[in-house]
Structure formats: structure tokens, C-alpha cells
Image (cartoon, rainbow, N blue to C red; front, side, top):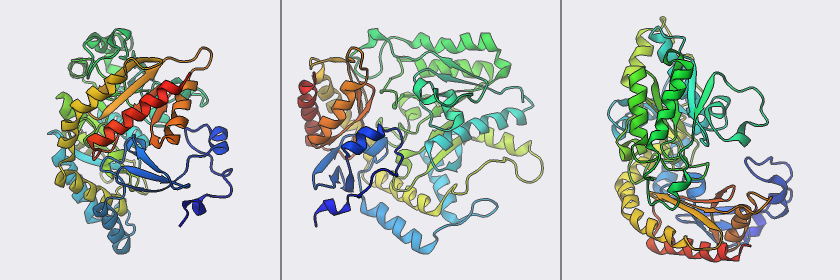
Length: 440
């Protein structure tokens, strides 16, 4: 059957997120099906997925075990509330995640997205300090060029100006550390050597605002949405040291990095630095059903419960927290990761990925290349007076060449499903070479 029968006859009503709506609707890129490493468009072309959808389809598309698990679940238990009630899969999934993550991170609060996970982590941090008798700790420290979702909490601690510009007053009080993107680290392979001292910016903000007012510092171990900005060697360990010194909680936003993206279960495992709270989403369910989570330490959980009034200890949650379909998808996804050893597979492909992406160093307009695990970024010089124009042209030309990429400004970001083959890696980069060479 001609895939074009699935094309809607009116694109006007859908207000698309983070999209140039007018440009897209003038020349739409519509996907109608997907399997393993490829999408199929409404005109029948197979598009190689270079971005795991949106950093999220880590096990590849339409995996039978996950599909069948969701089908069974919807027929058996389509919904059950988790306010004062429960269902077995939510508890089973929480226990599985506690076993997978670093020791001590063993209490899982389910949400529906990474944005909700960030806001939930912030509320958990505030509740913890209040339970300890330090309710004056209400300030959060974020970082420039960071992304923690589009809720008001995550937007406030995030550091991308365009995400905040149109929305007036932010959640306060918040301060921001400097970002870690230094010119001298251009074309680094893996984590850059320079910049560990940037972690000491936290000390500067502590001196300015006083440690007794600060609840938590939140960072992405690897900043993805802003263009794949990597932590300098030793940077995260130094943040952990400073946070411990002043009784400040450390929150890792692992919405992108968890579930194998760096070749380990979490970035905390990869870097050997354990936060007090970790946020998750994306690869948790392989993006089959929306789900997120904030995972807190045992000490935080017990402190909040032990010092609460009788009854409900934490007044927060969502109608769909721990939704049965999401739990079924997540449990099946964890099985696929384990049975196919996909985290180790990503680690084994990382050297080839690194070698191949850096071969684009001398291509037209390329000013930096960054990589870690199965993540990569190719930064192009912006056109005079038209920042982002080259990047948008890459999206269009790559899609015409049957490759899906993600672009932030003039930065091309790649994060393929962990099932990617060596041949598909070569196809991605050879296609990008052609695309980049064609752009003025």
C-alpha cells in the first residue's frame, strides 16, 4: 500500500513543539512506520535513524518483546491509580531499577517525562531539607547551556536563553554556574583535558549566596540538548566534593545518558560519581510509552518519611505515575537491554564511533567535533548574520539523503540506537560528509 495514504490533508491544527512550524508545514518530513534502525516516510523512503528518535529509542524501533508486553498489559490492566492504591508492575520496576543503578540510589518516584522528573527532583530536594530542619535551603544552582526540561522548575535551573525568554518570571531563587565549553578543548576525543577548575564556580556561588540557602546543584553529566557538551576530566568528581562539603544535594539529569548511551547503565557509573538524586526518562521505556522517574537515595527517602506528619509524607505526584502500560514497556525494555547486552555493545562500538566522527574534522565549515560513548556532535561555523541556518539546512539535506539527525543551532548531534551496526555507522558519516560538503 502506498504510504502516502497516511498523509494528513491538513497540517495546520498541530502546534508542533520545538519546531519551525511554518517551515515544516511548507515542506513536511513525515514518518509513518519504524523498525529497528529505520523510519519509513509517507512517500515510502527508509530513513536511517541517527538520533534514536529523540535520544530515546535505545533498543531500536518496534522490538517484538516490548510491543507484545504493552499489548498484553493493555488487555489485562489498562490503568490503576497509584495514589493510595497500586499495581504489581510499578513495584517490580522500581526494584529492578534500584538493582541496576549505583548503590544507595534505591527509591524511585515515577513521572511521565524528563521535564516532570526534573521538577520532582527539585521538590524532593526541598522536602528533604525541610524534613531535616533546614527549610531555608530553597536555592538551586544550575548551569549555563544546560537543559532540564520545559516545566517551570526545569526551565529555571536550565541555562538555554531561548527556552526562558518568552515566559517571564522564573522559579526563584536560582543561580547558574558557567558552562564547560572551552575553545581550547576543540576536537577533543572523549572528555576534554581542560576545565576541571570550572567546578569551583560552585564555590563562588556558595560564597555569594551562603551554603545555608542552597538546596541542590543540578547538572547533566553530559549536556545533550545544548549540543553535546562534555564534562572536563575530574569536573563531576569535584562537584561531588564541593556539594558534600556544604551539605548541598547533587542531582544528575540522566534523561539522555542513562540506559547505555555511554556504554554503562548510567553516566554516574561511567564517571564513578554518584549523585543524591538522578532523573530518568527517554530510554527507560525505549520511548514506547512516555515515562520518567526521579531516583533518590535511601537517606533522602527515609528522612522525608520519618519527619513527616502522619499520613501522606510527600504531597506530590501525577495521575499517570507508574502507569501500567509504561511499566510493562519499561520492564520489557530492561529485559532487551540485558538479554542483548546492549550497554556493553555500545561500549564496544565507541572506539569505532570516535574514529569515524573525527574524520570529518577537515570538512567544510567544521569548527569542532565532540564525542563520548555513542554520542557525537559536529559543530559548524555559523553564517554571518544567520546563526542556525547551516544547521537547519543539514536537517533538510540529510533527510533528503535518508538520514535523520538532530541539530541545535549549527551543531549536528548524533545518538543512534544501541543496535546500530558498523556498516550503519559508516553510512551515517559518509552521508553527512556529502551533506556538509554541499552546504555553502
